Image (cartoon, rainbow, N blue to C red; front, side, top):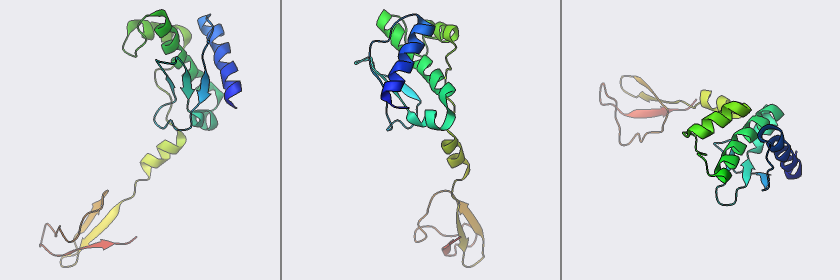
Amino acid sequence: MDNQELQKLVENISLEYFHKPFRHQATFNSRLKTTGGRYLLNSHDIEMNIKYYQQLGISELIGIIKHELCHYHLHLEGKGYKHQDKDFKVLMDKVGAPRYCSTLPEKAAGQRSQKVLTYFCSSCHQVYSRKRRMDTKKYVCGICRGKLVFKED
């Protein structure tokens, strides 16, 4: 899917669910990392994260578009367009837009496989597991005050 197809999809969803035209630009933004899409208040444009379409499909993309169109139409009407506003919550329920987008499979896999660093004491052989690197010149064993050594896996 390219930006022209996305533009047509957003226009169609706006007419079908909101019964109002979408008169601004909808584009893919590959720099978005933590969100599925965003509505830009100044330009009234909508940017979408292409990874959600590539990894989760068209149904997830449609849900994100509905969510962003809720922001868009409410903002243009001068109503409460923020997540905590009642107008926003009511419109989201009416059109079936999700409150949050799903977690990307690549993000979920990255959270589970965090690297664990292992250190051990050269005197008493106590093993220390850490998520972050530590300076072995600065820290010593908490049991015998012996020298710590990084263990390569």
